[in-house]
Image (cartoon, rainbow, N blue to C red):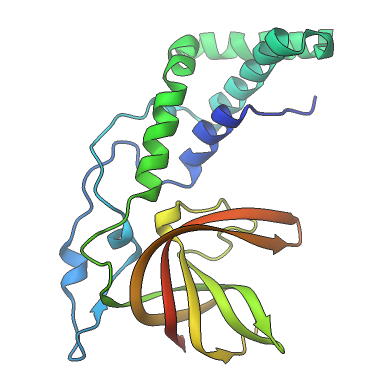
Length: 234
């Protein structure tokens, strides 16, 4: 059976693989104190996370198998309510089997569904939260280049991402873990995910970008922007 997820359930379940917290606490600020003679602050990716009120996320306690079974059961239940004519006996059987496995694992199915929208809203807020201490400051950060715009084969605009494969064959990171960079000078990127260091003024500028990949088009949401960034290949 091909499984389709509801938008809320999809976000609630898949964000767990891209956000690095279950119980969120204020971001440590110790890393952002490193400053060179030019006044540039050297930061790490954790420093980009904004402060959010701590919250408990029950979805983070589920195994991948439990998440899968919850998505199967949730989709069948939704179809039975909204499009009952599309629900086949095979789908009903799969939904019941998934439910039985969740019950055997003592998963609170109804409790999770009841909290779904609340957790989604909290995750969205945490994913978009920026660190106000870094806005309009000259920063330096290392990461990997994912090109967005080319000019005669040279890169002029790109996403700086924290890990190799992010946004492509790996999950899209939280918006506050992506930086849109426009460069002072176009440069040649010899391969995807070139390790680089970027220096520039960090701005908070929440926006979306279309990313064209081999496996299709993705709408990427980012929370930070650097204009006229200086790039050093590592």
